[in-house]
Image (cartoon, rainbow, N blue to C red; front, top):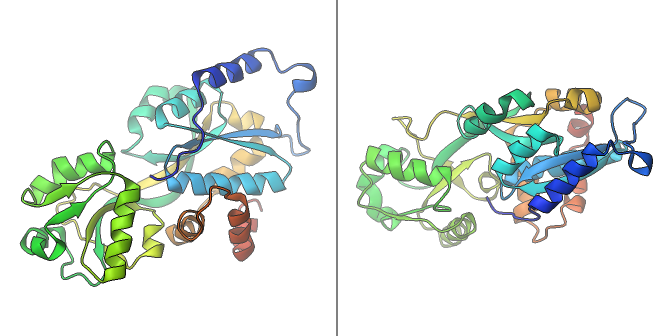
Amino acid sequence: MRTKKRIITGIAAASAAALALTGCSGDTAAETLENGDQADVTIAVFNGWDEGIAASELWKAILTEKGYDVELEYADPAPVFSGLSTGDYDVTLDTWLPITHSDYVEEYGDDIVDLGAWNDEASLTIAVNEDSPITSLDELAGAADQFGNTIIGIEPGAGLTRVTQDDVIPGYGLEGMNYQTSSTAAMLTELQTATNNGENIVVTLWRPHWAYDAFPVRDLEDPQGLLGDSEGIHSYSKADFQETHPTVAGWLQNFKMDSEQLYSLENLMFNENDTDDYAPLVEQWISENQEYVDSLTA
């Protein structure tokens, strides 16, 4: 939860809706490609969700090369699902189910379509340096002093923060530890510092995340299952996406990306390079993973 680029305002959303209602006549008529798809594709991206940003930038590069005109629109989850339901967005690639985004799917489910999960390894985690003295959350209370008596968290309002505070801490008797919440960026800075200094650290994290590719960390076992089960990351579309974009819909229905592939792309985009100009980095990653990328549209 790191990157915030462009949030669609009510004015912009209203303008998009107004354009749709005009029938897009004259010069604004929807261009159709030889495969029968409309050329314009609007992908809605959740602000700050790195896995969704990475997947969306990847598909923007793939579809642009195929002749599509792709727009990435950044917004928070609530307006994304609302926009999908009204057709203002074509697709979003970062819906976590069956837990995280279930309320939105329940609210808008009659007007949006599940194109399937492209990764089934999403999960909330508590991670430590890989050479730490413990392997399980039920050992953490007894070893708290070896971790500075502190758990490093992320944003106070995050779902992971709520689960850690309401379930994990009382469930494993960690009330005596300092649960430090601030931001994902601050957590990653603490993780980098501890790694550089060879110190023990415990952080709240989630999979998939590029930190697993960048740092020597491992998850603590959760014998009580308080962090919840693994989730799938799904692509969701507007109701008529399979009619307006049958080819792209088919590609996304078949899209699969394992966590190691995703980690490497995220690490390149968000950690190894200090830039928001992702296009050249995605092109570099594609060139290094050409066979896999070609298979996505085969």
